[in-house]
Length: 133
Image (cartoon, rainbow, N blue to C red; front, side):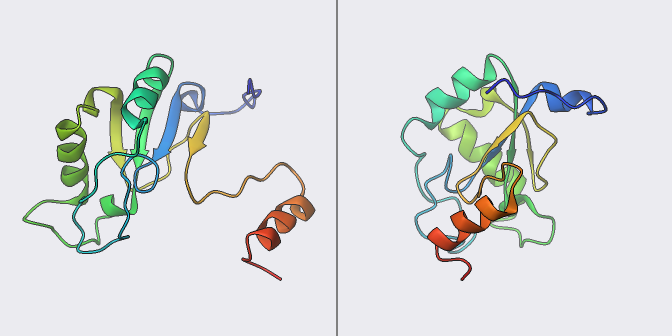
C-alpha cells in the first residue's frame, strides 16, 4: 500500500486508521434495529484489530455514535460501542470511538467505493453495483 503522505497533511494522517464499526467489526445483521449492538463480532475482527494496532492508532467510527441518536438503556452510542468492545476484549486495540470519519492513513469500511483518480472508473464500479445507470 505504501501511499505517499501529502506534504501538508495533518500528523494523524500518518499514524491513524479509521475503521467502520457496523458491518466491519460488529456483524450488524439487522441494521439499526432498536439501536442496540446485538450481534457478535465478524470473524477475525479481534485478530485484525490486534495486528493493525501494532503499527497504527485505531479510530472506530459509527453512525451509532452520533449525538442526535437516542439513548439506549440510558447510554450513548459511544458508550454502547465501548461496552461491546470491552465484552469482546477488543477495547485495548482502539484509541477512540467517534461519529466522524477521522483523518487517517486508510479506512476500512463495508460501504466504501474506492476512488482511484478517475470518475469514469468509479462510475463503472457504481454501475456494476447497481447504484447508478
